[in-house]
Length: 197
Image 1 (spheres, one colour):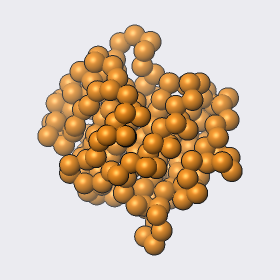
Image 2: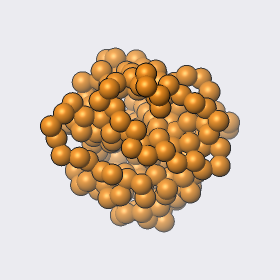
Image 3: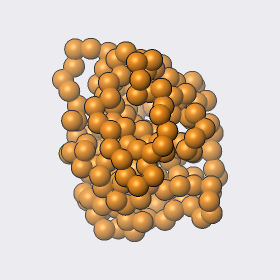
């Protein structure tokens, strides 16, 4: 795996070994950041189900100020910390263990609210909708915020439908890549300038 763009473009990063983690491919990661466009300098990022940390690290490479990485796997957290150290950004990263839902119920960022969020849970287990509902009530979410959710291509989550988790959550883009569907949402509590595309 490698960083696709920004300050660390071309740098190699590690992925956790085994089948417990499904890292976002370089191709899909590049497509996501092409959709997002320029990452606003200084934003704070939340990377849920972080795996290798590739999404949050890519955002840091492109100008984000800080990133919070959440993953249940100790091996994944070790890899994220190792990748952050190799890139020289450990001081800009907070790596946390535990369930994403528990994190959203209890934690708030010390450095500032997050306006860019990546959600890449295990496919087919109902996590996207559950996580989005928790995210909409999370006090650490900035307004406006961009939320990128990866699901299985074949799934039809409620987050696309009229019973979406929050009426202020709007699906801006949906793209299909191999077995992956990428959903880009914008969330706002009203009155702000639009972030991203």
